[in-house]
Image (cartoon, rainbow, N blue to C red):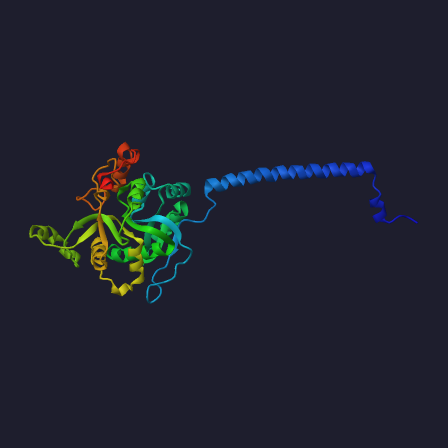
Length: 339
């Protein structure tokens, strides 16, 4: 009887089987080498391009009637969260910041967080202008360094935006301090870290460069402020607006209150100051947060009192960064630290 095909294939010669085995082994070795090289390339690419969780996030706040919504995710523990307030007309300022003290990529932001314990994000609201929203989306995709909050971006609503920022930051980060900063100041993150890390006996701290100023609820009356000084008008202590910090306990109290329980003034710094006065917090005054020039201990530099920030931030930011005292000098203890 003729043999079946199955019997025929089973009876290959030993030389044929040996040759086939050698070919299979060589193919497997070749594939292993190819996949090994590909794996190495992918590993290097992930480290370089940042195959990590996105940094930018959009937060909807105050959707419940009480304003006390649960944190959207596990809160990341840091020493300080710094929200750099910015707007749709400030793309040039953000560009200048990314060329100076604000890292422009994932790796730089991560390294800054690891070395200082501080997280930095640009804070911006929304607008009905589709063109501006589209441009913002492109910027978020490119740099991934924003915290977007669900509130209309408008200068007259800065107190509302500030409250929204503190609520959103508190929901995302378990931070010792929450820092509000403007996008037109030159900042030294390493020195800010040292200031926030100081031991404090008071758990409710309002930290800033303190001033006294008249309170006007109507922006049209701002012209009256110099006259108020001449008349010796007394008013409450509060921090200058370009940068200040609130401790975790203070922000927790803000988050717990209903929105309609807050009195909003026309000026954001006055508004926050009035809340702090009502809460009986500890006012900590640091002139290192309002310096007119870079020194070995200055933390924030801006053109006080001429401008509420740097007078020409896009140009001045780059000029300051080229100065060794601003960007490269060692961080030295200040007189404030020694007290």
